[in-house]
Length: 327
Image (cartoon, rainbow, N blue to C red; front, side, top):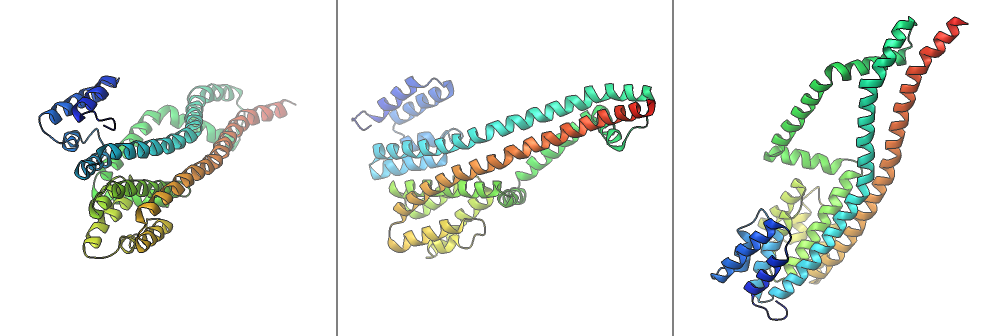
């Protein structure tokens, strides 16, 4: 678009470069729609499940203001930043997650395969088994006899929680709990604040009206209660209140975000302030995620160490007892 290519031609060229078959097909449909006189934003809106609300509304704003090429440049920068932040978080959590999964699998195998074989040997010896050994054997029997049932029960509980989460009350409950979880809750808040600031700044820079900007920025937030509180600000701003004053009513939004929005409104530099605070929160998300991982890793190692020590003691104590009786 920046070098003067027509929109239809530009979309066709992009479609030809797409290796993703679904995206290739969608862009071809968008190109046909635009060629028939439909706007680019409405063509994208027909595929809401594939394109984010932020993307569609930004394109619509760019069309209305006549700065579509500049809008796409801003979108490119916006999604590049958010993607890099997301990838940093995922890469930080990958190792602890894999370690924990492997640990659980190993423990289950030990309980179901190894411990029963030791149990048979101890029963043949006729030695009085210590409490820790009886506990491990009981745990092993539970895994062996009721493991499948336990899995079904856990799956049923997870499914019930998922279904309840789809209701308004359930979504609000789980979102509120998530924000209050130690360490993790803070990361969720910081990430939501970053998402809001990035989106709001881009919407305003693209020329979108303040009310539409607030609603679109609110919809971009993943946490339900924070998203609900931001969208609720639309009615307050319509009544003549400032955005900062409306955001103060929320008990989930970070205080610094609210203060910076109020300051930006008061000084007439809301777009610049939001851009600055978005960068700050991106950095905070990265730092807090690294801290969480640094705490999580020794916890996992400690957990594994305790399990190993318990299993070793449960196996060796009966042997020591038997050796003492022989002597």
